[in-house]
Structures are given as C-alpha cells and as structure tokens.
Length: 98
Image (cartoon, rainbow, N blue to C red; front, side, top):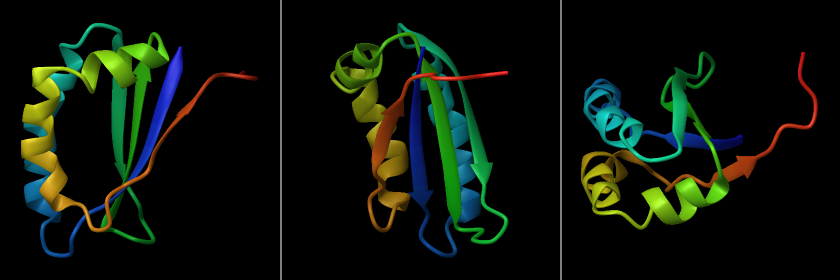
C-alpha cells in the first residue's frame, strides 16, 4: 500500500466551493484502478489548508494510471484552479504501524 500525501493551499474565499468541487471529484478518483481510499482534512490553525491522503495499491496506480488517464484531466479541471501555490505531492510506504 502506498499513501499519497498532499497539502492543498486553497485560495482565500474559495474554501466552500473547493469542498463542493472535491465532493464531485472524489467520484472520479475512487473509480480508478488501485484506489483504496482517501481522506480530506481541513487544518485547524490554517483553515485554507487541506490535507489530502490517498491510499493506492501501488505507486504506479497513481503516478501512471491515474495521472495518465483522461479522468485525471477532469480532476484537474475541477480542482487545480483552487490552489495557490500549487501543492507538492509525495508518496509514502508503511514502515511501522499499530
């Protein structure tokens, strides 16, 4: 399992529209091969910052499968205009868990 991590800096004043758009966009990503689940959380100290965690079966399911798909273009159209600056996406693999 791979965990995708992205801090999403949403432009001030667009937070409610972002959450609505993300609610629509989650249908796109959840239908992708290798998708296992996601959470979107809002930062308490910085309410315009969201934490996106997506679980994938493999790194390639995200980096090649999703990012190389036509569905990703729909995802981009729905969400990318909300970010300032554009987020950095990183991937993690489990080391320890309880």
